Length: 399
View 1 (cartoon, rainbow, N blue to C red):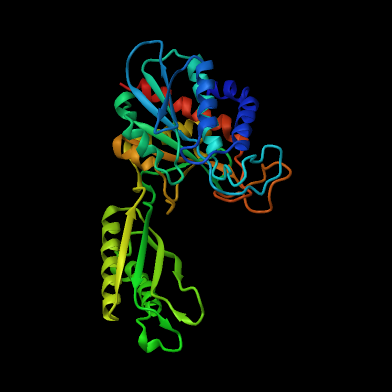
View 2: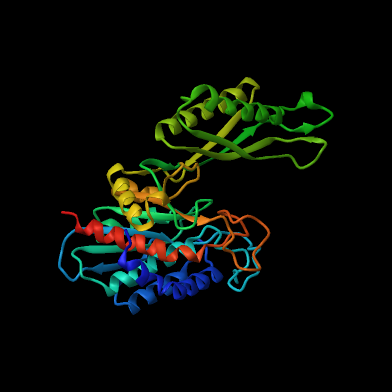
């Protein structure tokens, strides 16, 4: 099936590519997306869209009401923030803000939704309402949660909400999705083992926390392999161990930090309980004690079955059945999870290609997410925007 709107949006793809490159050149970190939010709001107003600013501090919401009166409503979400990464690319639209980079494609997500908004704003022959959500602070700030706290779904009621992320490695413009868990929860822990320091030549006068910390780290590796159901995916990663200031001194304490990721709260509860027990009792066995902080950040992103199937049908009609794939769940995290806890919906991936789209002057690294040589593929802007338009219109047409 060929969509009539695809060509109309494609004719404006070059202009939206310029917008995307401008956003890429001016990346802003979570809750600091002032310029980005102003640019988005200005474009929306220029197209006659009702604009609301300041949700979740720097979020923007655009409301498009159809000319045929009331009806259903649907939310479309794009994230706007960048990452604290020094860009290695040297092409013309590389970051002008040192230490900040759009290394995850949020500049492209924002642009795809902007292109869809322009089309919908100029073609309002539909019933119902499209709520376009430009979200800040996805990269660790919980911007979705903050927008919800500011009344996102009470001020702008939607029957369902959808999100989309570019995915390197999937062919450009292809779409991948699945129902159920698609992204993992993200959680952090910090454990301090308290001992007693001494001269390294007199270890019998100390309570050395270092071998205790080593045993705790080793014990953590048994949680997934021996306590969790083998069919439940989970990751426990110790990523930092800090101790000591001199080679001839046994330190007083050791700090152990890392992350835990799961697709279910049940497994997360098990992991946290086992970590607390293992750390506490291992320290006690050596006459020491420990302090444990376990922080639950983003919950797992879980797609709703009906909405996922609906999005799949739309994707087949937009890109063709051969270009629609099952998405392999990722242990990465995504704060769109908060929106899916509040409303039914689905989170899907659009292929960004293998990286050969990048302009001359790109870095030597791969075109993967959170990489200093990454760049969004502007060739998929028209496809992503057309998918948004078709999904919104079909959702509103349902009884």
